[in-house]
Length: 402
Image (cartoon, rainbow, N blue to C red; front, side):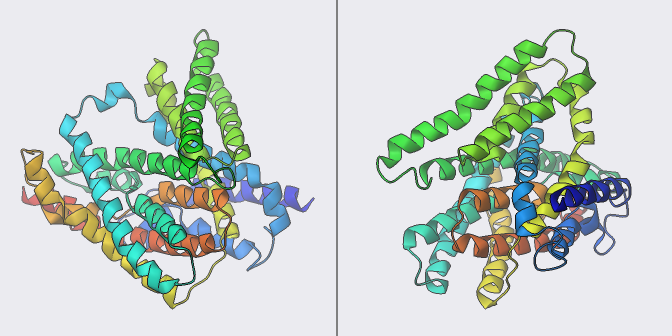
């Protein structure tokens, strides 16, 4: 009964939150984007969890675990559904190349710096585990959220080259990070990989990719004729729930599997442009429930080690997105300069980063993961608080000066 009460409370909060807190406000007012982005619900979940009112106790959360998997899957599906080839090919090839090179630079920088630092912060932990955490931190920082630019679009007077390039980069950068998550989850999979690590990891990676592609083709074939958009949305929810549940059962990331599902189906269907607004209309209530559950799951902890790692991650994020832009722009021969100031617009990582963090917590339930979750969530929240200021001093300033 307590799980039913908790679920009803979540539905009520999701309804009220989607009606009021997501209403458009002045983006550059203090803390306004923190409410617009929805991350405030993480703290609401924290207050409802075992460290607060205990409405969402450990037993209740266990019963609501399918909602967490569905939330991860739905976020991955929505992200993948926007990666339609017919849309992406409108942009120059060098935009894709910049996205890949920028992500690789951030990942390598974070792995090198945080891997070295964690060896001194956690000297008793195995080096393989610490460098594994460094890799996932690098993948995390390679993710960007398009939400900030969507909210800011009405407040940017001149949408020039910098704005359109940033919209493209934040829309596709998650592909590289979530793809990296699939690699980590496949080749670092416990307890399956005690021997024959490469061959078993390759099998897991292939299964994680082939399964959603096959399911998307079957689903498209069964719904291609005389299926309305609204009916198709209901079927898609069931499809994502099935794919998410399958991924969770085999301890694989629903975020990646459903991203591949979304990419495949968006490139098969001819009504992608009609379906996408309907899919987005379901995002807010699901997202609110998801964030509340994440807050309840969060084993909140803050000590000097976590604070130090958070500060380092924020610095690395700014450096990683600012330092390589000028040389990469010259290498790829962009028609307009890419100054370091442009890199400030990539501080926001939003819901896609939260989903990435939770995916790791569900896949790897060892003690150090709770430290990773605290570091990652605190760094993500602080990045969101800084991102409107950074955007104001990057794209808006650059396009205005131009």
